[in-house]
Every structure is written in structure tokens, then in C-alpha cells.
Length: 583
Image 1 (cartoon, rainbow, N blue to C red):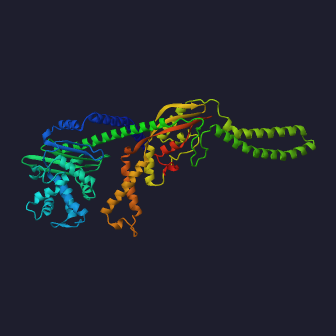
Image 2 (spheres, rainbow, N blue to C red):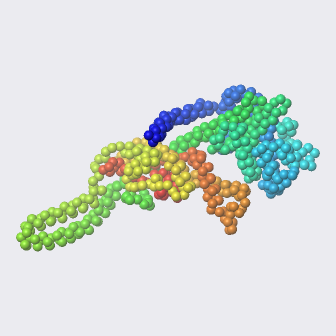
Image 3 (cartoon, helix red, strand yellow):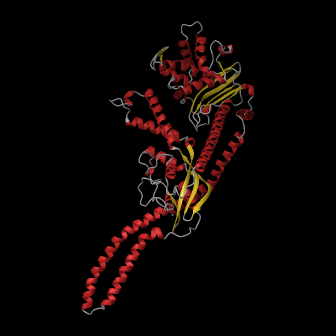
């Protein structure tokens, strides 16, 4: 009875999940529709104006900035209005000391006003300690008549300003503009080696507040600030959001209604805005790749009788013969079959002669009539010869005079099966391959990651009408696929950068062997981390490839011939090898 109840509960839960599934898909569709309604055909400023209205924020009490590190787009609201920055100033303050570390003028253990600098970096950025920050700028301006002004002059270039020509307001207080903060973070993002560890330290700051309040989709390196002065509350944040296209954002507020919610929502808005336009750009790039693939297909001259239509022969391991039969290949098949006939005939004649001896002996003893026995033996031998010859010639001579069915349906069924990862079904539609190896997972973890991403990336469209010539046909298609060649180029560069970053953060004893070579586990760690990062934004590597498929009609229907362009396309534009690994 208990088991029955248990199974009834499981069944009920399963039914609930099935019932909820449509609502999940509906939710995704609604979210996409909401994003399109919010961003489609609207400028950044129009989006921000709507946002300010929704949050009851007066336009002159807010300064906002946005910079896309990939596209170079920069947008601002009140870009040059000075606001009290609160603790955001601690970013450029630490940049002064980190630049000295990068130049070898000091190190992490250097004493600064009685504290190791490494400790001061963490306490000022992560914990936002004001007393420790004051020690830093006083140390930097030590011996100067106006230490604070001296420090402000030193960080002016980080802000994109000339210390002698900048607006005098800059020196009055802890004041910055949205444009200056974006410029500062842009410099930091582009030159992490010049300011080591700063971005990583900023990633540790307030993981669930300010920009991070309800935004956990992407990693954010930020520096917040809060202060009350003269009856006004200033709540600010600035940072780098590591979306597929990393963005730099800043928000200054001056007594804005629910300022913490305002900052969190602004961060989410900018991430949504970026991802929406990134996806739009990828779709436009894919459409352009499709147009180029179609142009390449249209530029390819149609095969003529003089040039022949047989595809190039590939080096591969299969259980079947390659290339579709043409007049020449049919003749070759017949020739091969005919070359086997004499050996079959000799074997049959030999067997007949061996059978003839007991027949003659039986006839001489009167047990059977010799004439009838010899006639039967001759007929059997002839039938065996004809059967053998017919079997050998069947592949070449049994093709129908007119093909039936639609070859486009075979192409569609094949590509649908490939996209759905129903490989057995797809391989049944191949003329010359028993397997393409797509069903086989590579041995290495990195290989499995790339193989899975590749197989998930397939989509296609048929281009043009199918050209049928008796029992052969040609159909053009455009295959959308993950471009592994482009991914591998970025992978190589990314691994080098990651290892370089690791060498600055870890002692050499953990990185290299006695010969100075990087340890295998270090290179493997860097490789996997880089690959995982690239594949998290795999849409940027999608491209389109034009392929002209060849088909041949068999007694089982239309079958696809695996030519070089198809194999290379399915391999992500790399050289085709079996088993999921690409050369």
C-alpha cells in the first residue's frame, strides 16, 4: 500500500510538471516580448527617460553613464554635471599605488602609514573603510603643501582630464562627473596589468547590494558610495558588468526616491539593454553570413557533363563505398563485379566436376538415369552462375529508370535528425557513410564541451529548388553552425592571457616545473576556464555555411552523398575527423 501511494505521488508530481511546462515557455516568450517592447526602435536616452519616470526620479538629480567595451557605444545623462562621489573615489586612489606596483616601485607588502598596502587595498575597496583611504591619499601627498589637491591632480589623467585645464569645481570637494568615472573605469578595464588585482578586488565588494542587489546573472566589479551631506543623501555606484559585451556603467543620485532600488534597477536595465542589442547584432551578423553563403553558392558554377558530378574522394573510415554512381562509376562497379565472375565460375565448375564423379558411378550401377542426372547438374551449375553474376551486378544494373519521391524531403529529414541529435535516423539517409561520428563524445573534457556546443548550434534553411537529373539530385542549403576555427583562435589568445594573470597572482612554485615550463595542470586549468568563458557567449561564434548536397536514388529512396563541404560544415568549419574531434 505504501508503494502504491508513493507511485501515485510521483505520478501526480509529474503531471504537475507537465502542466507547468507550457507556462514556463509562455513566461520566456513574455519576457522576450517585454524586452522588445522596452528597447525596440528606442534610443538609449529614450529608454533612460522612461526609467526615470518609472522611478519618480527628477532628471537633474541623477547622472548616468554607459559604455560598451565591444561596440564602443557611449551614452550619458547629465554627463558633465559634478556630483559628490562618496566612496567611488577610492578606485582612482588605489590606481595610483597599483601603478607603482606594476612598475616595480613598491610591492604588496610595502608599508603605507603602518599598514601593508595589500591590506589597505582590500579594506578600502571591499569594506570601503574611510580612515584607511585617508591614509592612502595623505601618504601620496606627503610633503606637499596641499596633499589633497596634489592627489586630485595626480588622478586627473585617469579621468581623462588635464590637471591644469580641468573645471575648478573638480578641486572643491570629492566631486566627479559621470563622464570622468566612465573614462576612469574604461582605462582600468583596458589596462588590468597596469593596475593589478583592482578589478578582482572590486568583484568582492557588496555581492548582494547596490548594483548587485538583485542582479546575479553576470559578474560585476563595482565600487559603491553613500554619504549624507547638507541634508542630501548621495547613493552611487560604478562598475564593470561582465555581460557578453562587457559594459561600464555609473549612477550618481542625489536624494532620489528609493535610491538603492534605483541603482539595482538601473544595473539590470543596462544589462538587459546590452544583451538585447548584442543578440540583435548576432542575428544581423548571422543574416549577413547567410547572405554571403548564398552568394557563394550562386557563384559556384553548375556541374556539366564535361566536368562530371562525382564528388571529391575523401580519406575516411567507413563500411561503405564513397561517391554517388555516375556513368563512369557505374561502369567501374560493373567492371569490378565482372572481375569477380571468373573466380566464382571456376569454383562452381569445380564443385560440379566433383559432383559428377558420384553421379557417373551411380549411373553405371543403374541407380539413376545418367542423362537426367547430368542435365540436372548442368542446370544447377548454370543457375548458380547466373545468380552469382546477378548478385554482383545488382548494385549497378538494378537502379530504376525513373526515381520516385521528393529528394528535398530526404534532405529535410536528414537535417532535422542532425539538429535533433537523432543520429541513427540521420545516418539511415546517407548513401555512402555508416556514421559521421557525431554521436561519439571525445575523451577530453574540453573536447566534450566543444562537441556539445557544436551539436547544439546546428540549424538550417533550404535554398532554391532541388535539381533532379534522373536518379541524381542536388539541393543547396545554408547551415548555421558554431565556427570552431574562430573560437579556437580566441581560445589560444585567452589561455595566454589567463596564464599571464595567474602568474601575477600565484607563486612561481605553483606554476612551473624545474625547467621553467608551466605545469600541465596549470595549462589545463587555464584552457578549461577560458573555453568555458568563451562558450558562455557562444552566439558570437555562430556563422553560416553554404553547402550543395548531392543525392542518389536507391531502391530504398533518395540518399545523401557526403561530400567535403558538408563534412567541413558539420565540423564547425574545421577539417573533418571522426569521433567529434576536429583537426
